[in-house]
Length: 67
Image (tube, rainbow, N blue to C red):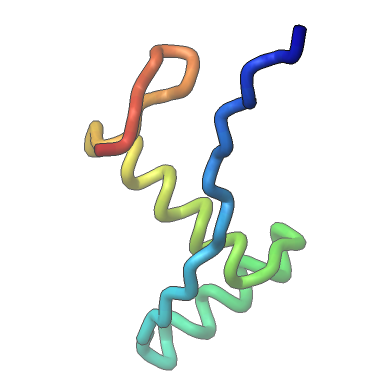
């Protein structure tokens, strides 16, 4: 007997362009140097933390989903 096909999870990445002021760019660069992160990773982390803080995204342990 063969197993049913496993669910395919879409993992395609999307590109998002963000415009920030020169001052924000300097802050981002300093933050990335001190944390050892790439700018994209720092922005992605900040975005997810903000989404959690306003209740759009719940922790996975609580069964939350992003609508």
